[in-house]
Image (cartoon, rainbow, N blue to C red; front, side):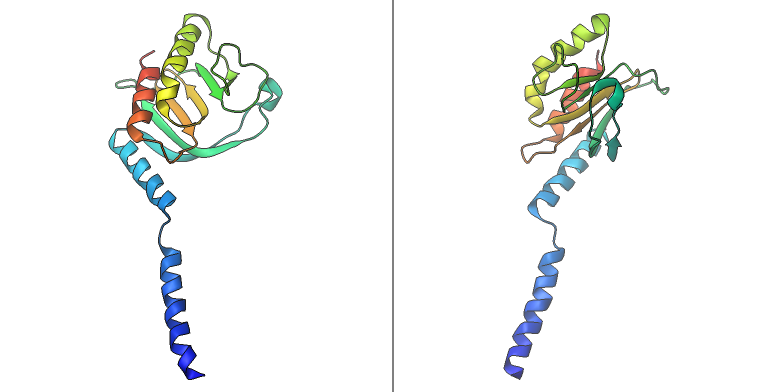
Length: 162
């Protein structure tokens, strides 16, 4: 009987150690987020609560947000636009799978649509939410295994240049 106790104790200790190790996905996410911060993006966990009665988006979006701030513009301005990656009432002009939460207007709308159609495929990730004001642009993404911080930075830079 005592012959089985030592191997069981060793297996229990080894199992506990392996259980505490980060998974490959956890390591990928940590590396992705660290690289994004090195590129100047602000990274945080965020819950976006949509205006369901206004746009038909029902579910809160809980994900990691990546934000790029405009240089030399310290004050937040009025929300310019917000796009969500779930069904809503209006997706006029947007790439497939995206809907307006707060629609951009005029020339800004046309410029945004052109940039989204051109640069969204290079993101190599699923866009869950995108919003911008005068000082920043923020996106929430699925953080797929193919995701790269350089792609996030390039995408946000293109949108901030609007």
